[in-house]
Figure (cartoon, helix red, strand yellow):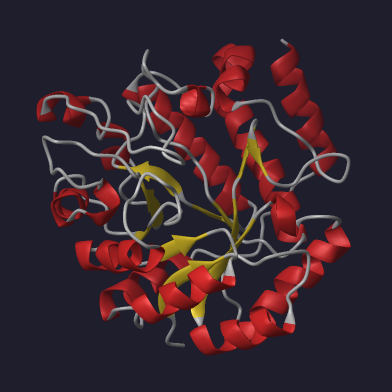
Length: 330
């Protein structure tokens, strides 16, 4: 199946006829869902089936379901989880087990409604200056803790039949502005970045899917990492990440130019896929024109990632939930 170098969102709770026609023609590699697309389990199962029917294959359907502020599926239909950093502190010495259980439980809920890729874990290292939008989404302030927690999160997803997406490569922890609105710039010596910010991604470079950070490291390049061939070369060669790389949302205001220009720049820099989230048809039409078929390398990486999709391992969900809650209550 030859797909375009793009992942699209959709507008509402079900596909319109226009969306069905467009997706069939554009052939995106996958789709991403947001709160605007979520109502009930039945509705969500129907929507994920519609999306796959539109492109004619069992394509990946993504969501951001980290827990804390970033969870698109919420109560009363689904469980809600504390911010990751709050959970880490509550679980103490049992933080690793709690992280595994949290994400195994999330995976069960996602797969039940046809979602098989989650944009997590977060390998950004917490800093004193980390912007509030990222602060409690982080797992810790040292490389060892962040790496270990990401491993447990990814294991929980994979055991539940859901593919994890490592974010935000090569590191977003030093961002002091919100990338949805402004472009973060981190002017720190390269050796310091390599020792802290980039290190978890290097340790986790065997993961199969990663998401870029819209951030500038002048020590690497003056362009944002998402659209910088120098940054992408560093990610591939120095960090050693050979998985499928998707951009963070290409419509975020950290990037300049039109969405089509941003998309073309990201692909030219070396990203495998452009992620576009808002579901706006005019944007999607422009991006579809700017993006061609996936390269042979990108297809190989995508196949390696999708090969990890497997039937979930058996688990006693009530018992897992009881254990998880007990770990957080001390």
